[in-house]
Length: 170
Image 1 (cartoon, rainbow, N blue to C red):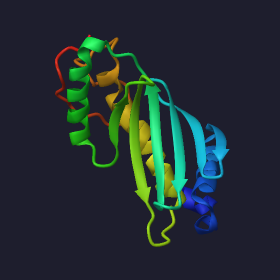
Image 2 (image 1 turned 45 degrees about the vertical axis):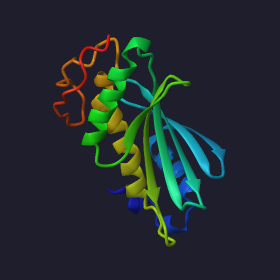
Image 3 (image 1 turned 180 degrees about the vertical axis):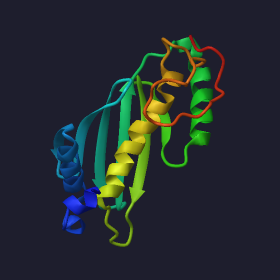
Image 4 (image 1 turned 60 degrees about the vertical axis):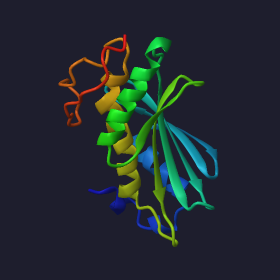
């Protein structure tokens, strides 16, 4: 059964109200920060990811940010950025960036809903799951304790692709 079948009047819901219902449906921990913003924790195979979704009526965009903390060695930042470029070239939707000050890897995606378009429950659920899947897929490439050369053939439940990245980042 699709999520759309659980939400008969989804088109009448504010985008963040819809996200809140989806979080409840999946039993994800969440905090409604503001009328236009919600934060949640989604458990993946490698770690728990912090996900924030915010609605901008001005831009007509539902913005998703999925983050996880990490501490890359300072002398390997050039290699980190090379790895980010390689990974971002492979992504069709969303992108990774490094927030130095917060020591966070960030996956970002914006769903533009111009012209009074509405986000459906399946669309928002896919958006959240795609963010977690991208973080899970490339986690070992960003995880400095394993190094970027660690094999990606793991027990991850999402399909993985071979990836050539920067030399050893340890």
